[in-house]
Image 1 (cartoon, rainbow, N blue to C red):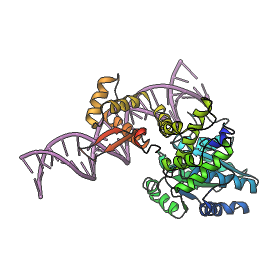
Image 2: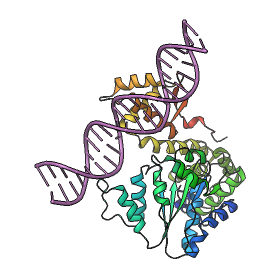
Image 3: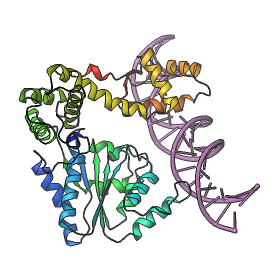
Length: 342
DNA sequence: AGTCCACTGGAACATGGGGTGC
DNA sequence: GCACCCCATGTTCCAGTGGACT
């Protein structure tokens, strides 16, 4: 039933972008100077998750590479590579310039020097989830390199600006800003239909089912495609000819649970212990969390460190925090609680 | 209004693991 | 082997915030 599984994967870049003509033209025009061998401005692409920010950025960059020789591109996920060192390392790695760089003993400034000396070609650096950077000063490093064009992808513009220093804010404010809104249900339907057409055998999924997926995903294309992938994968394993309505019911929960599991897997044992306490006893305040945590683990971390864990898990959308001060309470985010397929 | 206190999060500092160069 | 360097992680300190209580 699955004809081309790649089409249903999260990072797949389609050959045509649906319903994003204005954004596509805008971002293309920002990178346009590169076609004449000139430096391009920084672009900031913002919008909620699943609005196609990464997809659009990769698409535009790939098309640029088709047009112009000697343009390289690199995509850095700042969630995983959240330190200045890791970002610079990842970029050099993609450019094949890390042979003699050692993670532990190469000064960061040397990485910047190395990038500055790299003048084989112009490079487009896509910084995905740039608001997750622990130390945004790496943006400053990259700005100082003429051969590099930067596309910053973030959920919210203000979240990004609030964390960088004044010099950088003024530079970023003058950057070109591409805003992406959530897809309407019928737009998301078109996207899902295009993926189903390329990725699945004909007749595997009905129009009505695609509308239901689009509805459940509430404008989030990543989630919609995830639901379709989950349903198709299960149908395939159980050797059905088509996706049944029963399969679809579980698929939304499965897709969300998969996203959550990936976040859970990235936690350290101490972070996991804190998460489990909130799962078992939540909603619960920070003091009780720390008391229970201290009882349960050997060599417990301090309150301050547990606070850092809690705020990180909140960012990961694993925990909900309610209240601001003494009334603060944490509880877990339950994927099965959010808009199931009707 | 004033005080207390739990909580938050930034900043500086300390520690430890892993690597280099002599 | 050892001094040194770098990054990641955790700790200490502290100012700011806001609810509860007097």
